[in-house]
Image (spheres, rainbow, N blue to C red):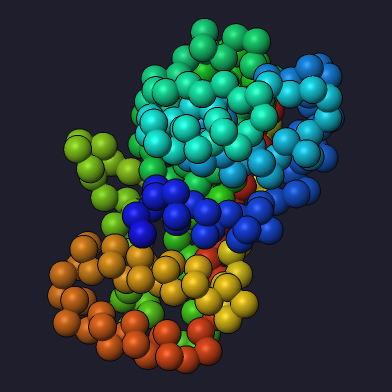
Length: 256
C-alpha cells in the first residue's frame, strides 16, 4: 500500500481516530466565535479528519476539503455530507483563501511540508485570524516490544528518510511540530501541543504489519545497506508478538 492510497488511509483511520488528542478540542471549541462554521481541511485524503471532527464541533458546519489528488478528493466529498471539494496544492493557500474560514485542519500533514511551507501556512492562518488544528505529525520516536538489535538502525534510517530532500523540498519530518509551533508563536499565536500516539499490536494485526513493512521499506530506501537484513527482520517481527507505539503530536494554534 502506498502512503496515500485509499486502502492505506482506510486501514489507518480507526487508529487515527483513537489517537487524536481529544483534550485540545475543549480549548478549540471555546475559541470558535460563530455557530455557523466553515472548516477547511488541508490534505484531506479520503476525509477521515472531517468524519472524526465534525461530530465533535458545535453548530452547523460547511467543510471545504482541499487535496491535490482527484481520486482521494472524490472519495472524501462523497463521504462527508455537504462537503465542497477543492482540488489544489495545499501549499498555495493564502490568507485571502481563508477569508470567512472558522477553522483550518490537517492530519498527518505537517511532516511532509518544508520550513518555508509551514511558515507560509502559519502566516495565512494568523492573517486570516483563523484557528488551526493539525493532528498526527510524526516526532521521530517509535517503541517496539520486544526489542530487536536492528530496531535503532531502522529507526534512524526511517527518520532520515522522513527528513530527506524531494524535488528540491527539504521535508521537515520529525521536526515538523516544533517548526510549526515556532512559526505560529513568532506571529503572536498561542500554541497548544499534545501527544497522539498510535498503539499497535495483535488487535490491529493488519495495520501493524502494513505499517512495519512501510517503515522498513523507507529505512532501506534511505540506507540501502539495510536491504540484505530486511526480510529476516520482517519475518522475526511479524512472527512474534510485536507491539508498537508510534509517537505523534497534535498542535492547536490560536491567533491573537
